[in-house]
Image 1 (cartoon, rainbow, N blue to C red):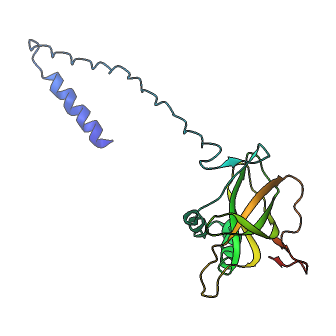
Image 2: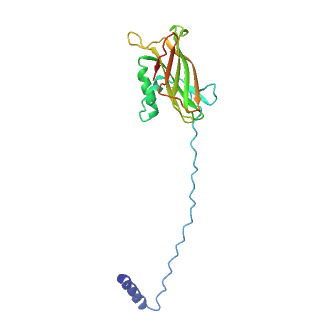
Image 3: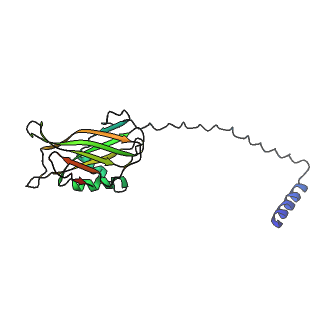
Amino acid sequence: MKKLLSALVALFLMLSVMPVHSATPKPKPTKKSAPHKKVAKKKVIPSPSAKWPPKGFSPSDDKYVFAKIPNQKELQGEASNIYDKSNNALRYDLRKCETLACGAITVAAEISCTWWEISSIFERVDTTTGLAVEKLGTLRTLSPSTRARNLQTIMLVSQIKGVQEDGLLRQDIKTGKIELTCHRDPAPDLSKRNIFTPNTPGPLPTSG
């Protein structure tokens, strides 16, 4: 405050001794305020919605349900995602499929499903013609819920030995006539997810 008062006194003294005939100081030009620039608003372009159904998926009898047969690369990629707990069952079943004959299907639905049911048959085929020569059994597979438009890969695990004596995978077994249902009612017991019925009389084996 003292410095401010001293400066004002000094300024007053300078003005008081100024000659009368001295030129009147020119007024300082007033600064014109810069015109207000309008900020152009960027248009928010919505991201394109995911294509539905996804590429490679085909509709089933239920118009809301789609499916595809995954290849080996897709199976390995999905199973390697350890951060997705829904893949735990897939990884568990893939280990079983190192010795048992299996199929696989990736399912998705337009709406939420409380549980999935997949029926399929296992056949022995002629490796030269690819034609089925023997029905080996039927399989009923149960799988947990999915949200609308979520994909889920499900392994179809039979009780048929899937390796030869030399340890190589059998090439004469295939999965066919796959039918899938997206259920909306409460889920049953899903602890036994694969129920295999062989095409010969005897006890019905199951795999969890």
